[in-house]
Image (cartoon, rainbow over all chains, first blue to last red; front, side, top):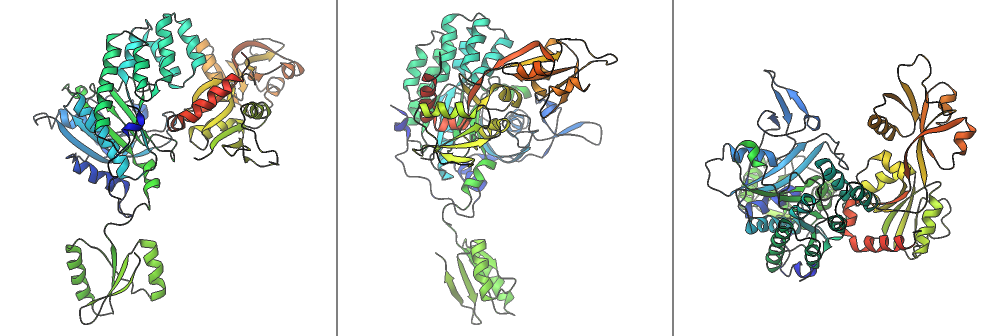
Amino acid sequence: MNELSLRANSPRSPSPPASLSAEDVLRRLFRGWAYIEARFDVLQPMNDGRQYDLGQTYNVADEVGGLLSLRPDFTSLVAREAATMGRGIIRPLRQSYCGTAFRKPDRAGDRRREIRQSGVELIGASGLLADAEIVALASEGLAALQLKDTQIHLGHVGFVHALLRSSNLTEEGKTTVCNLLARHDRTALAVALTNRGVPGKTATALDAVLDLVGSTAVLDRARRLTRDSNALRALEQLEELIALLSRSELPVPVIIDLTEVRDRSYYTGIRFEGFVPASGFPILRGGRYDNLVQQFGKAEPAVGCAFEIDRIAPMVAGKGTADIETILLCSPANRWAELMMQARALRAQGQRIALDVSSLPPDQLNAYRSAHGITRVLVSESDGTLDAKGDRR
Amino acid sequence: MMPLTIALSKGRLLNPSLLLFDKIGLTAVSDRGRLLVFDSTDSRCRFLLVKPVDVPTYVEQAAADIGIVGGDVLLESDRDVLCPLVLGFGTCRIVVAAPGGNARALPGRPRRRVATKYPRIAKRFFSEQGIPVEIIELGGSVELAPNTGLSDWIVDLVETGRTLIDNGLEPIAEITTTHAQLIVNRASQKIRREEIGDLIERLSKELPC
């Protein structure tokens, strides 16, 4: 099997209507996978057990001297709900969200203050099938958005975690090594490993991590680097997942990628990112984070992913053809009541109807149609019939 | 396939950078005049000429897939880019220098004042050394600062040391040695990994051992 075999043979998802936003497309997808959308207040209490760096959140005092923050992410809020309000609900829980998170732009590379995200969380399910569900959903999401030449890079943090555990490095040393691995800075990495006395075989393995990206041959190369049972177990889990995804013919190619070492304290199993040539940033991130929910008092496994809407939306805008036409209903004066009733009847049939409330003259009507994606103009005649004045399709 | 976009630093690193790409067959078109954007003769690459300090930004924010930048600029910028290859040119030292090599502060100052184009590097260095200083950020001609009473020391990039000597300054500490580096956008490394991997391998073969 190679990465090409993971490409889809199945048909692409239906085109999103031109008027559907990236959020609309993903909402429809999430509903199709039986995820229920959760809604969260923008202002969130800071004493709910979440472990945030106050320097990264926008904070305000409430009326009794407590501290509120603008929600800095959604995953922790879903986890909190699951561990508290959803404690008694039989698992797994499927929750989705869509909205804006707020964080200070001090994270490397990310200058955004407002981060629009749509995502899903599968709470209370561990193992292969749960991981596969999230990667498959992510893949279908990218396909539904009709982004060209997307890729999913999928890895497992357990491999590098195990190598680091066997390196005899202190926590400070592990952080330094991870930072250098994250920058692909082989020269400085070699110096750091030598200066810290990391055994030769482990040092070689840590350097080789940077080459572990590609087809399933990567897994064989990774196995040859270590005998650590935890590292080998991580590779085995990844191999099973890749095999399952391959058989299910995902619409987006999956590349095995063990080079990603950032966020090592957050993820506990698989982790993945989605890329598209038109964006210099990941447009999708996800993975398993089994240690998050226990912050709220109930330890349980969780896996999820988030689509970066800010980065996706400009690429999706104007794509596809409308599956629901937009009709502009016009009428000679004095027939407004009839027009409104006709519009109501058409809307009940699933049509999208705009009323010509400005009585636009013909020369402006065409400009209005172009600007607003109106597919048809219907004129309500005095006898109650609707006369077509043009069809753009 | 879109051409690979490569941001090059204007100034002292430009010619060695173009020469290095020429060695691996990516030759810049000759009739580029004063153009800031030009292609390689085979149209596989597009070169951008940008101010050195902006190269990491172009690469981090994906306006370029790859860049060549001095290690001093990279250290100072703290941008989130990959640094897979140290190149064999543009080697310099970042030093602390003082008039006549005298490390004492001017009389009456509670702490030493340090003039520099590299405030992050300087702050990090003095913090690690446990030396309280006041950093004065300048845009250039840093060597002038001690001679005009603006600062006690400077932190600056030194290639031959000639400019320091000419201005009566001597190094009192070396912070680091830097080299020109190849930097890569994170997403480009993922999405164009074979192309970029091949380019890095060919470049590395042309570097002095």
